[in-house]
Amino acid sequence: MSVAVCLLLYSFAVATLSPWVLPRLTHAGTVPRLGVVAWLVVMVSVVASWLAATAFLIVSLVRYWHEPGRLATACFESLRRLVDGGAAIALQVALLVLAAIAVSTLSMLGWRSGRSLWRARAQSRGHAERARVIGRRIDGVDAVVVDAAERAAYCVAGHPDTVVVTSAALDSLTDRNLQAVLAHERAHLAGRHHHVLAFVRALAVAIPGVPLFSTADREISLLLEMAADDAAARRCGSLTLLDALLALSMDAQAPQGAFGATGTDVLARAERLAAPAAARNRWNSRLLLTAATFLITGGPLILAALTASSAMWCHPIAI
Image 1 (cartoon, rainbow, N blue to C red):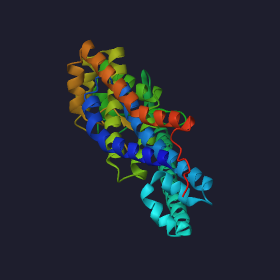
Image 2 (cartoon, rainbow, N blue to C red; image 1 turned 180 degrees about the horizontal axis):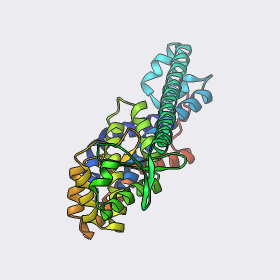
Image 3 (tube, rainbow, N blue to C red; image 1 turned 30 degrees about the vertical axis):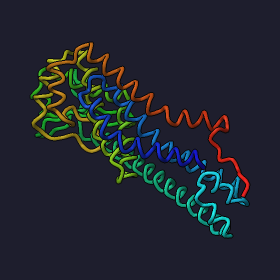
Image 4 (cartoon, helix red, strand yellow; image 1 turned 180 degrees about the vertical axis):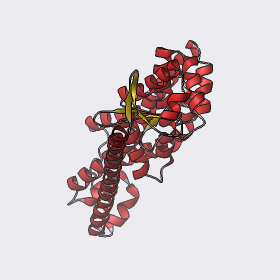
């Protein structure tokens, strides 16, 4: 049971500190892909700690079911007098209720996350199908063109994945700008960014009261856009992409569930394209984010190692 307590304390510390620390390391987008990895590691480690703590609680409860005093006094010596007073049955019931609450809470979170993922997938596929039905193909444009007064370009996952460009955007972009925009959208699809964002948003919807997940949703959305910017800039040039970004930035946003070329924090992305980070800054960011990621994952790994060696199990003591 001490392992469960340690895991819960660890997850509380990470969930509390990460929304304050990580944005300072990732928001500039110096190394956006590594920033995404760091945020995902934090989110997964917190959820995994909750799952592991629940599992340890259940295992401990089963192991000491007929001797609940040993479980409690091994981890919380202050409960000795309660057990000595003949409250073993009450302690059994309390531990059983605690385990039931933990299991039901995690089950509800899993169901809400799964429902959110299913809805996002269905919405994305439906939008892609509608775009292919109402849109048209133009020679030399590797995208579906939809007639609309707003300048917009975005991609949606489906079978097949679809890049959508409005007729207004097509009219406002030069050929080089258009190729940069299409490269940006193809980078989203090639990197399966929609899967990452759907996972993150599912957790944010399922666990709305924890700032970690809402902050991660915002930061990862921006970092994925920056990662796609980098891929497009390598292919077409930073200034070409910047011109395209500015040409599209005054009009409509992409539909929900889609990645738009101008969908997230255009000013920060434009500043980043206009003045790319120096190689030294990128290496510094890599080192800091790598160190932070290892520190975050170190807690559960150390606990797992100690548990495997039986160093952290609650050993029974005589009453």
